[in-house]
Image (tube, rainbow, N blue to C red; front, side, top):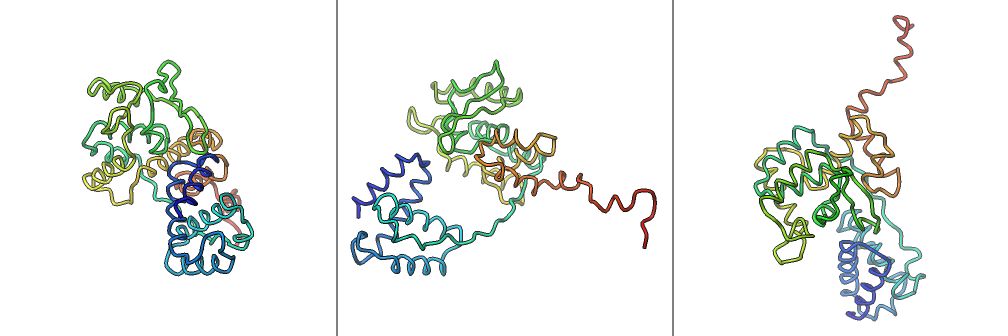
Length: 283
């Protein structure tokens, strides 16, 4: 089993999957392989389907989707037996709109972060729309104060992009730099020299800040990314620009924010307004 997982890990990395996705896929594959009573190369489609049906009874649709994606990769790519999973289908995952933090709530959260390093990371996440892993891995050489941009290198799907560097964020980063003097080029170091701070540590700092600030909404570092996009939309930025800043591969992903921006929705005129033009509508 270890050999199969090692090969799968190599395949995932060769295809450019993100580290987090690699870990999730391997965990799902390990769970699947662990319950087999035969070698994975002797498994047939009915066995895989029965396993998927058991998962559906115990796990959420999103979790089942991750497990199925891992098993499909295992058999399609690593074991090269695609027929085993050709009738293994993804479940429908209910799409829920995220809670969006108001600007005042973001301000309270950032003010409640106790350690300046984590405050600087979370300000970077909100001020640029970066994913938390991207914010943790910013290098000093990525910050271009002359042009007013930050270069994100090898983000999701191994894509580079630029995001804005606002004067407020630049001032905050300079204050952090003067106070802590991290060893270049790592801007936000971890516990060991030359390493980056972990996303888990940032999440924990934000959790404590949420409790301290008394924010009732569910808050994660990704909530700041949602807030960034929604607040940009409400301030008049076009959806294509927001797509580029977020690093979305499809405009469909970015279009979500037109659904969660209540201000944007409220400013849109209903066609019923046309019936009211020129006086009271006919009854």
